[in-house]
Image (cartoon, rainbow, N blue to C red; front, side, top):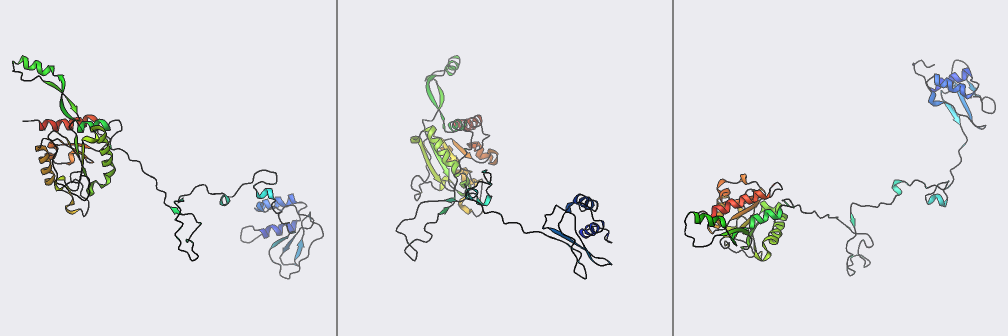
Length: 369
């Protein structure tokens, strides 16, 4: 055995040469005892032979396993190498695939597995196609367009759907509470009539019941400043919603930057007109953050709190309620603005009751003597 304490293939060959097992089963048992079970010899054909050359103090000799034809082979080297070699007949070349195998069928007619690299790709991350170039354009050397016949690649753009800022079931109710104003109906207010009679008051007119209506129309002011740029789609959605509730012929859409007092745009974007409040009682809907967000390097584009207070005072003095649709909470604004402006946040948590209370508070403040 090896003097290093480990057993190698040469130790197995030396043991086989000394003990000369009678069959392959005995040789396999010897290999298992020496820890070389994974090197179990297999049956050899008549033309196969194994030469084990063993080195030692004496003359080298050759040993042949049982089961191989012919006599033992003789070593010819003066210094025997510590190797074991096996000479085998060359294996026949595999047969060429037939036409059926090339089409994907095996020897038994069963479908053969196709490699992943040979499979056709049925998807692509890049859109291929697009409109064909005009036939008259030719920039090549031979009068042909460079890259003719190759598919054109373009970026696959997936349109994003807009998600409304309010719940779908409450959106129309919240907007109606913002744009509606109380008007007298044809029904008699019996409670007011009884109170007047019981108090012995002179009735100069029959009291009528009041109800909410959109007959007065609405003025919609859209802020196109840098602070409201992320909410541009919400502004377009609110414009369509207001038009469907108050009537497209009763809505006045104005656009501005900074504050409406600096000028508004009606139809022509190159023409800036001075702002004028609507008739008394017409609600003014502000889609703005009232200068709450000041992007970097905005400068004087964003209006300050003093400018907004002056604008709200002008509109309220004209008898028009101001409702602000803002992406911020009402508590983020000063108390002076919360007193005269009904803030309705663009939040899915906003309920119909919140919008009704906010607008009723502002209308009650305007009706005070």
